[in-house]
Length: 525
Ligand SMILES: Nc1ncnc2c1ncn2[C@@H]1O[C@H](COP(=O)(O)OP(=O)(O)OP(=O)(O)O)[C@@H](O)[C@H]1O
Image 1 (cartoon, rainbow, N blue to C red):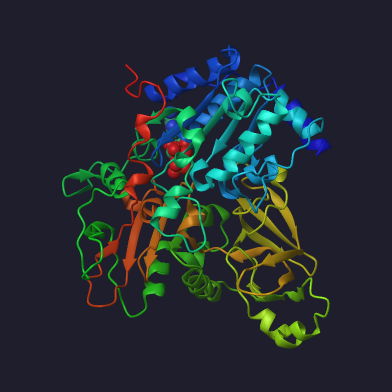
Image 2: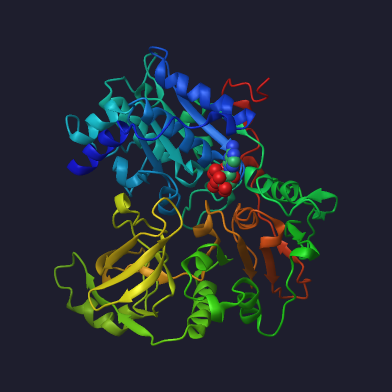
């Protein structure tokens, strides 16, 4: 914490780099830039300064955060940068995950606050910060923002209720993201609970000013899209229509929503008897010659809704890589508060524990080769780019450490070592806490759609042996690329549903009324 504290301060005083070039910002980015920067430089006393940067995938939110950050650091201001996911944090300079930075409790309720004591270095850092940037905010449960609000009011000595209340204690906050993309994950939640978990359903939302970006910079900054049209829509318009749920859908089963949309022919790979092999050779072209190139691996991925399919694709790709497999087995033990745990140990022997799989946790058995891409599954050290979601190419497989070269983000190309760690896995299904000692990694030729959120890739294969299962997933999938040329779908449908149709689940109420809140002029005259 001490070094982190000093890092933030020294980073804020860097003076080697010039002020960022504001002329490259588009009109909406420029307007948002000035509003936020003016709030930092001349804050209105006793007012709230809570902004939400809202724009669909590729509209340049991350680009704008970086510009604001560079500008304020040049002026000697302290800016704390966080993101809701580890992978989003790796895309921004000096960022960490919001949960680790603000000590947000994992078990959270309406009255929770963060574990930040007044008078500590962290409390002082928050007091001294001129701006907090929080990317991919829609992925976090609204109760987490409310806990941060409570903690900041306390640190800044601002009453949490009444006329003197100011959101986040009056700190200038720039949250951002896209409510068309995935919403907070709530176990066993239906549509209503998922939407209710969203920041837009918090009391905080009515205090925020929405800054909207609408121009797709990911697609317009690249060539190769001009000739591609789908039902009269260009690629950028089509991807946004997917996000908005306005691509006309069909119903294939009685009493089910008409949310099966047709995927344009130009994007489709025909389903074959060997769909994984077909998808793999389409996305990992020329693999035999390029399997060891970090640049080649960085720019492509196969994305799919479930971990099960991710594992199948990864195993297929691993077999294509020359060289010896190195296998790492975890050591698994169970822990319980029970006075006599012996019956539990008898009921759940080690072999049973070894067979358990959990979302976001490494498997008991991990097979790797040198030159394979892996994804980190825990925040090991955000200061050197080791976040949950960081991708690396393996360069050394040792007994005690694995070494890898970071692929993408602000630490691209850096070689780092990953140790084995003990993961405490507390799953409601089991009457014990599983302690698994293992390298916190998995192969990542393929990843889940949720893990791909925030990444810009050149070549993406969307593998759908089953349709997506929650809001925004199809939109996240189609909006990862710079051009239609880089996107391919392989769909396998049961029940005679044609393989050019897939589900597009969109909870319109999650973003329909956003423009009604805040008093910012969204038209930027
Ligand atoms: N003003 C700009 N000038 C040039 N390139 C830009 C500009 N704004 C954004 N870009 C580029 O467009 C691409 C998409 O931008 P960015 O990643 O910031 O979008 P985003 O809104 O954060 O996307 P997502 O929601 O998918 O994470 C990036 O390659 C970025 O460098």
